Image 1 (cartoon, one colour):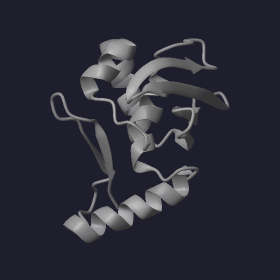
Image 2: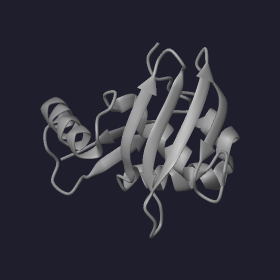
Image 3: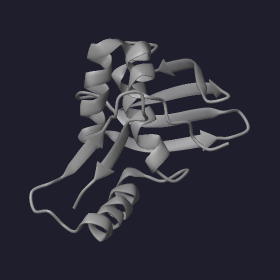
Length: 138
């Protein structure tokens, strides 16, 4: 099974509107350092930078594409912005890929598809009811 792509609505249900917005901000700022997907256990783990601290370790467990549980080493143990950021970024990253390699690969993919647009650093696409997706630019 590949990494599930929760919808924006599911992520808002997980973390509330504020947590979802803060998670989008974390994702936009490239704060997700590393993700790892265990297909057998249907578990995503990630390292996400926190404000002034070392990276937090996050985990999201799934069953059939539905989020069963989440945890994070930050002060907000479940449904925090770090988990939201990891869930937004992970489907676009290769398993075990780090942020630098992902950004380089995504920039090349986007630039090849739409051409380089000076000053554009990235866009988060979140259609109603559809999966939220980060498209990184050059």
